[in-house]
Structure formats: structure tokens, C-alpha cells
Image (tube, rainbow, N blue to C red):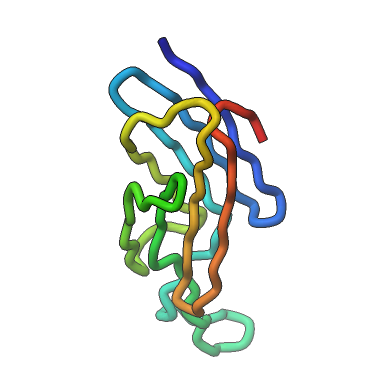
Length: 116
């Protein structure tokens, strides 16, 4: 039995698809983030472009952390991630949080089994 669902968050420009499977939950995520490492030079101003990249992604359900991912500055612009989590059941809450090097924190909340 498979169940496929989507999460679309226009505020954070974040999209995800997740599939509930018998053995695990597969989540595919696309972040709209510049992922600048701070080493490039702006051609117009000849100044360094400030570093701005995701450093951590955390998955939790019912206040229990399911997984954490540490991300480096060497990940491409608008990164795509795919992760496998333990089995999630329809009706439980899923929270995906991420943080960047400027200490900005973002979060997306979804109820498993409902397209948002």
C-alpha cells in the first residue's frame, strides 16, 4: 500500500512530496534558497556576495525528532533532498524545520495524509 501526498508552502517557497510505504516514509524536498558560500564576487559591484546557505534540516513528529541533516555551504542553489524516515501514519503531525547560517529559522507543518 502506498500513499502519496504533497506539501506546498508558498511563504517559504518550499515543496515536498512524501510517500507512506509499508517499511518507511520517503520524503522528496525542493528548497528555494540561494545557497551562497560567500566566495563569489558580484560582477556589477566587484564585492563579495554574502554567505547564505542552509546549515541544518530537522524532521519531527509529535515533538519527537526523527532525523537531522547537517548541510554544508557546498550544496547547489535551490537544493533537492530525498530522505527516508520511519513509518508515519495518517493523522500524525510532521514538522520540517531548517536553519541557515544567518540564524534564520523556517518551519513547515503538515498533517500526514492531507495535501497542503
